[in-house]
Length: 428
Image 1: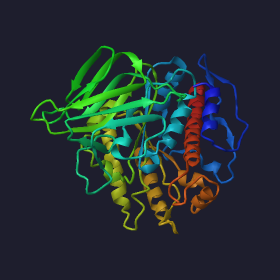
Image 2 (image 1 turned 45 degrees about the vertical axis):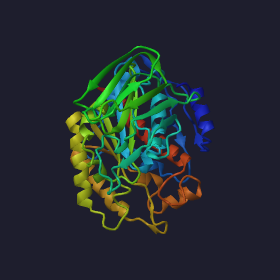
Image 3 (image 1 turned 30 degrees about the vertical axis):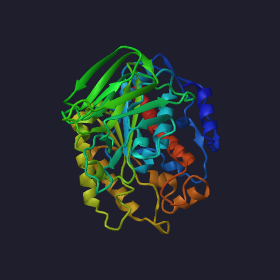
Image 4 (image 1 turned 180 degrees about the vertical axis):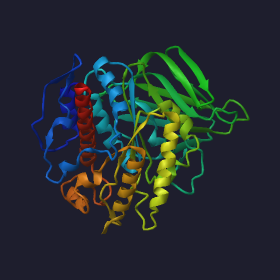
Protein backbone atom coordinates (compact mmCIF):
# COMPACT_ATOMS: atom_id res chain seq x y z
CA UNK A 1 0.00 0.00 0.00
CA UNK A 2 1.44 3.38 -0.98
CA UNK A 3 1.83 6.24 1.50
CA UNK A 4 -0.85 8.31 -0.29
CA UNK A 5 -3.31 5.47 0.16
CA UNK A 6 -2.39 5.31 3.83
CA UNK A 7 -3.10 9.01 4.28
CA UNK A 8 -6.44 8.72 2.51
CA UNK A 9 -7.41 5.81 4.73
CA UNK A 10 -6.57 7.80 7.87
CA UNK A 11 -8.56 10.76 6.55
CA UNK A 12 -11.58 8.65 5.67
CA UNK A 13 -11.64 7.15 9.14
CA UNK A 14 -11.39 10.65 10.64
CA UNK A 15 -8.64 9.60 13.01
CA UNK A 16 -7.69 12.89 14.65
CA UNK A 17 -4.37 12.40 16.38
CA UNK A 18 -1.30 14.48 17.08
CA UNK A 19 1.64 12.90 15.30
CA UNK A 20 5.00 14.66 15.28
CA UNK A 21 8.26 14.04 13.46
CA UNK A 22 7.06 11.21 11.20
CA UNK A 23 10.11 9.87 9.44
CA UNK A 24 9.80 9.62 5.66
CA UNK A 25 12.66 7.83 4.01
CA UNK A 26 14.12 4.45 3.30
CA UNK A 27 16.18 1.98 5.27
CA UNK A 28 18.88 0.02 3.47
CA UNK A 29 18.90 -3.54 4.79
CA UNK A 30 20.94 -6.29 3.15
CA UNK A 31 20.85 -4.49 -0.19
CA UNK A 32 17.10 -3.81 -0.16
CA UNK A 33 15.23 -0.59 0.53
CA UNK A 34 12.26 -0.65 2.91
CA UNK A 35 9.87 2.21 3.48
CA UNK A 36 10.42 3.84 6.87
CA UNK A 37 7.21 5.84 7.07
CA UNK A 38 5.39 3.62 9.53
CA UNK A 39 3.60 4.94 12.59
CA UNK A 40 6.02 2.70 14.49
CA UNK A 41 8.84 5.18 13.88
CA UNK A 42 6.85 8.27 14.77
CA UNK A 43 6.95 10.31 17.94
CA UNK A 44 3.31 10.14 18.97
CA UNK A 45 2.05 12.67 21.49
CA UNK A 46 -1.47 11.95 22.73
CA UNK A 47 -1.02 13.33 26.22
CA UNK A 48 -2.79 10.43 27.93
CA UNK A 49 -0.62 7.59 26.52
CA UNK A 50 2.24 6.29 28.67
CA UNK A 51 4.71 6.00 25.80
CA UNK A 52 7.56 4.86 28.07
CA UNK A 53 5.71 1.55 28.59
CA UNK A 54 5.09 1.00 24.90
CA UNK A 55 7.46 -1.86 24.22
CA UNK A 56 7.49 -5.67 24.15
CA UNK A 57 8.46 -7.10 27.55
CA UNK A 58 10.59 -10.23 27.72
CA UNK A 59 11.40 -11.80 31.08
CA UNK A 60 14.15 -14.24 30.07
CA UNK A 61 17.48 -13.51 28.38
CA UNK A 62 16.70 -16.23 25.84
CA UNK A 63 13.16 -14.99 25.14
CA UNK A 64 12.67 -13.23 21.81
CA UNK A 65 10.72 -13.21 18.54
CA UNK A 66 13.80 -13.85 16.40
CA UNK A 67 12.23 -16.80 14.53
CA UNK A 68 9.26 -14.62 13.59
CA UNK A 69 11.38 -11.60 12.70
CA UNK A 70 13.70 -13.70 10.53
CA UNK A 71 10.72 -14.86 8.50
CA UNK A 72 9.35 -11.30 8.34
CA UNK A 73 12.74 -9.98 7.23
CA UNK A 74 12.95 -12.53 4.42
CA UNK A 75 9.52 -11.45 3.22
CA UNK A 76 10.31 -7.73 3.36
CA UNK A 77 13.69 -7.97 1.64
CA UNK A 78 13.34 -10.93 -0.73
CA UNK A 79 9.54 -11.08 -1.18
CA UNK A 80 9.54 -14.75 -0.23
CA UNK A 81 7.18 -16.79 1.92
CA UNK A 82 4.02 -16.18 3.90
CA UNK A 83 4.16 -14.59 7.36
CA UNK A 84 1.10 -15.48 9.42
CA UNK A 85 -0.17 -13.66 12.50
CA UNK A 86 -3.28 -14.60 14.46
CA UNK A 87 -4.87 -12.25 17.02
CA UNK A 88 -7.48 -13.83 19.28
CA UNK A 89 -9.82 -12.34 21.89
CA UNK A 90 -13.35 -11.17 22.64
CA UNK A 91 -15.40 -8.24 21.37
CA UNK A 92 -12.31 -5.98 21.12
CA UNK A 93 -11.05 -8.27 18.38
CA UNK A 94 -14.41 -9.19 16.83
CA UNK A 95 -14.95 -5.51 15.99
CA UNK A 96 -11.93 -5.93 13.63
CA UNK A 97 -10.84 -2.29 13.92
CA UNK A 98 -7.80 -2.94 16.11
CA UNK A 99 -6.59 -6.00 14.11
CA UNK A 100 -7.23 -4.21 10.81
CA UNK A 101 -5.11 -1.27 11.92
CA UNK A 102 -2.20 -3.61 12.69
CA UNK A 103 -2.79 -5.47 9.43
CA UNK A 104 -2.65 -2.23 7.42
CA UNK A 105 0.52 -1.14 9.19
CA UNK A 106 2.20 -4.43 8.30
CA UNK A 107 1.11 -4.13 4.67
CA UNK A 108 2.44 -0.56 4.64
CA UNK A 109 6.01 -1.64 5.42
CA UNK A 110 6.77 -2.19 1.75
CA UNK A 111 4.98 -2.81 -1.53
CA UNK A 112 3.51 -6.12 -2.71
CA UNK A 113 3.32 -8.09 0.55
CA UNK A 114 -0.42 -8.78 0.63
CA UNK A 115 -0.56 -12.52 1.22
CA UNK A 116 -4.36 -12.66 1.20
CA UNK A 117 -7.17 -12.14 3.67
CA UNK A 118 -6.94 -15.62 5.18
CA UNK A 119 -9.54 -16.97 7.60
CA UNK A 120 -12.80 -15.00 7.86
CA UNK A 121 -16.28 -15.51 9.26
CA UNK A 122 -19.47 -13.94 7.81
CA UNK A 123 -20.63 -12.33 11.07
CA UNK A 124 -23.76 -10.87 9.52
CA UNK A 125 -25.15 -14.40 9.13
CA UNK A 126 -24.84 -14.73 12.92
CA UNK A 127 -26.71 -11.44 13.46
CA UNK A 128 -23.46 -9.79 14.51
CA UNK A 129 -21.99 -6.48 13.39
CA UNK A 130 -19.91 -7.11 10.28
CA UNK A 131 -16.51 -5.46 9.66
CA UNK A 132 -16.65 -2.58 7.21
CA UNK A 133 -13.98 -3.89 4.85
CA UNK A 134 -16.26 -6.49 3.27
CA UNK A 135 -19.96 -7.03 2.60
CA UNK A 136 -22.10 -10.07 3.36
CA UNK A 137 -25.48 -11.07 1.94
CA UNK A 138 -27.36 -14.33 2.29
CA UNK A 139 -30.65 -16.15 1.79
CA UNK A 140 -32.33 -18.70 4.02
CA UNK A 141 -32.95 -18.94 7.74
CA UNK A 142 -29.82 -19.38 9.82
CA UNK A 143 -29.36 -20.16 13.50
CA UNK A 144 -26.19 -18.97 15.19
CA UNK A 145 -24.16 -20.40 18.05
CA UNK A 146 -21.29 -18.72 19.96
CA UNK A 147 -18.77 -20.49 22.16
CA UNK A 148 -19.19 -17.69 24.72
CA UNK A 149 -22.86 -18.53 25.36
CA UNK A 150 -23.22 -21.33 27.92
CA UNK A 151 -26.60 -22.54 26.68
CA UNK A 152 -25.25 -22.91 23.14
CA UNK A 153 -24.08 -26.46 22.46
CA UNK A 154 -22.76 -26.90 18.96
CA UNK A 155 -19.58 -27.86 17.15
CA UNK A 156 -17.17 -24.97 16.69
CA UNK A 157 -14.01 -24.48 14.74
CA UNK A 158 -11.35 -21.79 15.06
CA UNK A 159 -13.84 -18.93 14.79
CA UNK A 160 -15.88 -19.92 17.86
CA UNK A 161 -19.05 -19.11 15.92
CA UNK A 162 -21.21 -21.49 13.89
CA UNK A 163 -24.20 -20.71 11.69
CA UNK A 164 -26.60 -23.49 10.72
CA UNK A 165 -29.56 -23.86 8.37
CA UNK A 166 -32.08 -26.61 7.68
CA UNK A 167 -33.51 -24.86 4.61
CA UNK A 168 -33.24 -27.10 1.56
CA UNK A 169 -31.89 -24.21 -0.53
CA UNK A 170 -29.88 -21.23 0.73
CA UNK A 171 -26.90 -19.12 -0.25
CA UNK A 172 -24.37 -16.55 0.89
CA UNK A 173 -22.17 -13.99 -0.80
CA UNK A 174 -19.00 -12.21 0.30
CA UNK A 175 -17.54 -9.20 -1.49
CA UNK A 176 -14.80 -6.72 -0.69
CA UNK A 177 -15.80 -3.11 -1.16
CA UNK A 178 -14.63 -1.50 -4.38
CA UNK A 179 -13.27 1.54 -2.53
CA UNK A 180 -11.11 -0.63 -0.29
CA UNK A 181 -7.49 0.45 -0.56
CA UNK A 182 -6.20 -3.08 -0.06
CA UNK A 183 -6.67 -5.78 -2.66
CA UNK A 184 -7.75 -9.01 -0.97
CA UNK A 185 -8.40 -10.87 -4.22
CA UNK A 186 -8.15 -14.65 -4.04
CA UNK A 187 -7.94 -17.69 -6.28
CA UNK A 188 -8.35 -20.36 -3.60
CA UNK A 189 -11.34 -20.68 -1.27
CA UNK A 190 -11.61 -23.08 1.64
CA UNK A 191 -15.11 -23.42 3.13
CA UNK A 192 -15.26 -25.19 6.49
CA UNK A 193 -18.40 -27.28 6.92
CA UNK A 194 -19.65 -30.80 7.71
CA UNK A 195 -18.54 -33.26 5.07
CA UNK A 196 -20.39 -36.29 6.39
CA UNK A 197 -23.60 -37.76 4.95
CA UNK A 198 -25.82 -35.43 7.02
CA UNK A 199 -24.53 -32.19 5.51
CA UNK A 200 -26.05 -30.39 2.53
CA UNK A 201 -23.94 -29.93 -0.58
CA UNK A 202 -22.47 -26.62 -1.63
CA UNK A 203 -21.61 -25.14 -5.02
CA UNK A 204 -19.46 -22.17 -5.90
CA UNK A 205 -21.27 -20.06 -8.49
CA UNK A 206 -18.63 -19.07 -11.05
CA UNK A 207 -18.34 -18.23 -14.75
CA UNK A 208 -14.94 -19.87 -14.96
CA UNK A 209 -13.79 -23.49 -14.53
CA UNK A 210 -13.43 -24.49 -10.89
CA UNK A 211 -11.38 -27.36 -9.51
CA UNK A 212 -12.88 -28.82 -6.32
CA UNK A 213 -11.22 -30.91 -3.58
CA UNK A 214 -12.92 -32.15 -0.41
CA UNK A 215 -10.60 -32.45 2.59
CA UNK A 216 -12.51 -34.65 5.02
CA UNK A 217 -9.59 -34.83 7.47
CA UNK A 218 -9.56 -31.07 8.08
CA UNK A 219 -13.24 -30.50 7.29
CA UNK A 220 -13.30 -28.18 4.30
CA UNK A 221 -14.11 -28.03 0.62
CA UNK A 222 -11.50 -26.18 -1.44
CA UNK A 223 -12.20 -24.38 -4.70
CA UNK A 224 -9.38 -23.49 -7.10
CA UNK A 225 -10.02 -20.64 -9.55
CA UNK A 226 -8.08 -19.78 -12.71
CA UNK A 227 -8.24 -16.05 -12.00
CA UNK A 228 -8.24 -13.91 -8.87
CA UNK A 229 -11.62 -12.68 -7.61
CA UNK A 230 -12.71 -10.17 -4.99
CA UNK A 231 -16.12 -11.73 -4.34
CA UNK A 232 -17.75 -15.12 -4.10
CA UNK A 233 -21.23 -16.60 -4.20
CA UNK A 234 -22.10 -20.01 -2.75
CA UNK A 235 -25.29 -22.02 -3.17
CA UNK A 236 -26.23 -24.64 -0.58
CA UNK A 237 -28.67 -27.36 -1.45
CA UNK A 238 -30.17 -30.52 0.03
CA UNK A 239 -29.57 -33.34 -2.46
CA UNK A 240 -30.63 -36.48 -0.55
CA UNK A 241 -33.00 -37.57 2.23
CA UNK A 242 -30.13 -38.43 4.59
CA UNK A 243 -29.00 -34.79 4.63
CA UNK A 244 -30.40 -32.75 7.52
CA UNK A 245 -28.54 -29.44 7.71
CA UNK A 246 -25.63 -27.25 6.67
CA UNK A 247 -23.25 -25.85 9.30
CA UNK A 248 -20.74 -23.17 8.35
CA UNK A 249 -17.63 -22.73 10.52
CA UNK A 250 -15.72 -20.17 8.46
CA UNK A 251 -13.81 -19.59 5.22
CA UNK A 252 -10.23 -19.05 4.16
CA UNK A 253 -9.64 -16.71 1.20
CA UNK A 254 -6.17 -17.26 -0.20
CA UNK A 255 -3.81 -16.38 -3.03
CA UNK A 256 -0.43 -17.69 -4.20
CA UNK A 257 1.47 -14.47 -3.53
CA UNK A 258 4.11 -14.06 -0.81
CA UNK A 259 3.03 -11.73 1.96
CA UNK A 260 1.46 -11.05 5.33
CA UNK A 261 -1.69 -12.87 6.39
CA UNK A 262 -3.13 -11.23 9.52
CA UNK A 263 -6.04 -13.25 10.90
CA UNK A 264 -8.28 -12.12 13.74
CA UNK A 265 -10.51 -14.41 15.79
CA UNK A 266 -12.91 -12.58 18.10
CA UNK A 267 -16.11 -13.64 19.84
CA UNK A 268 -18.22 -11.24 21.87
CA UNK A 269 -18.13 -12.29 25.54
CA UNK A 270 -15.45 -14.94 25.03
CA UNK A 271 -13.23 -16.12 27.88
CA UNK A 272 -10.20 -18.39 27.75
CA UNK A 273 -12.50 -21.32 28.56
CA UNK A 274 -14.75 -20.43 25.60
CA UNK A 275 -12.12 -21.33 23.01
CA UNK A 276 -11.43 -24.64 24.75
CA UNK A 277 -15.00 -25.61 23.76
CA UNK A 278 -14.01 -25.51 20.08
CA UNK A 279 -13.67 -29.21 19.28
CA UNK A 280 -12.42 -28.53 15.74
CA UNK A 281 -9.99 -25.82 16.85
CA UNK A 282 -6.77 -27.72 16.18
CA UNK A 283 -7.80 -29.28 12.88
CA UNK A 284 -8.80 -25.90 11.43
CA UNK A 285 -5.76 -24.24 12.98
CA UNK A 286 -3.64 -26.45 10.72
CA UNK A 287 -4.87 -24.36 7.80
CA UNK A 288 -3.91 -21.06 9.45
CA UNK A 289 -0.66 -22.30 11.07
CA UNK A 290 0.34 -18.96 12.63
CA UNK A 291 3.93 -17.86 13.21
CA UNK A 292 2.89 -15.35 15.89
CA UNK A 293 -0.19 -15.52 18.13
CA UNK A 294 -1.38 -12.34 19.85
CA UNK A 295 -3.40 -13.31 22.94
CA UNK A 296 -6.02 -10.70 23.93
CA UNK A 297 -8.33 -12.93 25.99
CA UNK A 298 -9.00 -11.80 29.54
CA UNK A 299 -11.36 -8.85 29.83
CA UNK A 300 -14.32 -11.23 30.20
CA UNK A 301 -12.45 -13.70 32.43
CA UNK A 302 -11.62 -10.97 34.94
CA UNK A 303 -14.94 -9.12 34.84
CA UNK A 304 -16.59 -10.84 37.82
CA UNK A 305 -15.46 -11.22 41.44
CA UNK A 306 -15.14 -15.01 41.12
CA UNK A 307 -12.22 -14.67 38.70
CA UNK A 308 -9.88 -17.64 39.16
CA UNK A 309 -6.26 -16.75 38.44
CA UNK A 310 -5.04 -20.37 38.40
CA UNK A 311 -7.89 -21.45 36.11
CA UNK A 312 -7.07 -18.55 33.81
CA UNK A 313 -3.42 -19.60 33.56
CA UNK A 314 -4.35 -23.25 33.08
CA UNK A 315 -6.74 -22.39 30.25
CA UNK A 316 -4.09 -20.32 28.53
CA UNK A 317 -1.55 -23.13 28.78
CA UNK A 318 -4.03 -25.52 27.17
CA UNK A 319 -4.54 -23.05 24.32
CA UNK A 320 -0.79 -22.60 23.92
CA UNK A 321 -0.43 -26.37 23.71
CA UNK A 322 -2.97 -26.48 20.90
CA UNK A 323 -1.09 -23.83 18.93
CA UNK A 324 2.23 -25.60 19.50
CA UNK A 325 0.77 -28.87 18.24
CA UNK A 326 0.31 -27.15 14.88
CA UNK A 327 3.53 -25.11 14.84
CA UNK A 328 6.20 -26.00 17.45
CA UNK A 329 8.06 -22.76 16.64
CA UNK A 330 5.08 -20.45 17.15
CA UNK A 331 5.72 -17.31 19.20
CA UNK A 332 3.25 -15.82 21.68
CA UNK A 333 2.52 -12.21 22.56
CA UNK A 334 0.28 -11.60 25.59
CA UNK A 335 -1.67 -8.33 25.67
CA UNK A 336 -2.80 -7.30 29.14
CA UNK A 337 -6.39 -6.29 29.79
CA UNK A 338 -7.20 -2.66 29.23
CA UNK A 339 -8.24 -0.54 32.17
CA UNK A 340 -12.01 -0.89 32.60
CA UNK A 341 -14.92 -0.40 34.97
CA UNK A 342 -17.32 -2.91 36.47
CA UNK A 343 -20.94 -1.91 35.73
CA UNK A 344 -19.68 1.53 34.65
CA UNK A 345 -19.21 2.54 38.31
CA UNK A 346 -16.22 0.81 39.83
CA UNK A 347 -12.65 0.48 38.61
CA UNK A 348 -12.07 -3.22 37.96
CA UNK A 349 -8.96 -3.95 40.03
CA UNK A 350 -8.96 -7.58 38.94
CA UNK A 351 -6.97 -6.24 36.00
CA UNK A 352 -3.92 -6.52 38.28
CA UNK A 353 -4.54 -10.21 38.96
CA UNK A 354 -5.00 -11.01 35.26
CA UNK A 355 -1.92 -8.94 34.42
CA UNK A 356 0.25 -10.82 36.92
CA UNK A 357 -1.06 -14.12 35.54
CA UNK A 358 -0.01 -13.06 32.03
CA UNK A 359 3.42 -12.02 33.29
CA UNK A 360 3.80 -15.45 34.95
CA UNK A 361 2.88 -17.13 31.66
CA UNK A 362 5.28 -14.95 29.67
CA UNK A 363 8.11 -15.79 32.08
CA UNK A 364 7.39 -19.53 32.07
CA UNK A 365 6.97 -19.88 28.31
CA UNK A 366 9.52 -17.28 27.16
CA UNK A 367 6.74 -15.30 25.51
CA UNK A 368 6.45 -11.58 24.95
CA UNK A 369 4.03 -9.24 26.70
CA UNK A 370 2.60 -5.92 25.60
CA UNK A 371 1.25 -4.09 28.63
CA UNK A 372 -1.80 -2.30 27.25
CA UNK A 373 -2.95 -1.50 30.80
CA UNK A 374 0.20 0.52 31.54
CA UNK A 375 0.38 2.00 28.04
CA UNK A 376 -3.13 3.38 28.57
CA UNK A 377 -1.99 5.04 31.79
CA UNK A 378 -2.89 2.46 34.44
CA UNK A 379 -5.85 2.37 36.80
CA UNK A 380 -8.69 4.81 35.97
CA UNK A 381 -7.07 5.77 32.67
CA UNK A 382 -10.18 4.55 30.81
CA UNK A 383 -11.95 7.69 32.07
CA UNK A 384 -9.36 9.89 30.41
CA UNK A 385 -9.63 7.89 27.20
CA UNK A 386 -13.42 8.33 27.34
CA UNK A 387 -13.16 12.07 27.96
CA UNK A 388 -10.77 12.33 25.01
CA UNK A 389 -13.16 10.47 22.70
CA UNK A 390 -11.16 7.24 22.53
CA UNK A 391 -13.28 5.02 24.80
CA UNK A 392 -17.00 4.42 25.06
CA UNK A 393 -19.30 5.26 27.96
CA UNK A 394 -19.38 1.65 29.16
CA UNK A 395 -15.72 2.15 30.16
CA UNK A 396 -14.77 -1.21 28.68
CA UNK A 397 -14.81 -0.78 24.92
CA UNK A 398 -13.18 1.81 22.70
CA UNK A 399 -14.36 4.07 19.92
CA UNK A 400 -13.16 3.44 16.37
CA UNK A 401 -10.28 5.88 16.75
CA UNK A 402 -9.46 4.35 20.13
CA UNK A 403 -9.04 0.89 18.59
CA UNK A 404 -7.03 2.42 15.74
CA UNK A 405 -4.73 4.08 18.25
CA UNK A 406 -4.26 0.81 20.14
CA UNK A 407 -3.44 -0.93 16.86
CA UNK A 408 -0.87 1.73 15.99
CA UNK A 409 0.73 1.56 19.43
CA UNK A 410 0.96 -2.24 19.43
CA UNK A 411 2.46 -2.23 15.95
CA UNK A 412 4.95 0.44 16.99
CA UNK A 413 6.06 -1.74 19.93
CA UNK A 414 6.52 -4.72 17.60
CA UNK A 415 8.50 -2.70 15.07
CA UNK A 416 10.74 -1.23 17.77
CA UNK A 417 11.50 -4.80 18.83
CA UNK A 418 12.07 -5.78 15.20
CA UNK A 419 14.55 -2.91 14.92
CA UNK A 420 16.47 -4.38 17.87
CA UNK A 421 16.55 -7.73 16.09
CA UNK A 422 17.96 -6.08 12.95
CA UNK A 423 20.64 -4.23 14.91
CA UNK A 424 21.69 -7.44 16.63
CA UNK A 425 21.71 -9.24 13.29
CA UNK A 426 23.93 -6.59 11.72
CA UNK A 427 26.32 -6.59 14.70
CA UNK A 428 26.76 -10.37 14.39
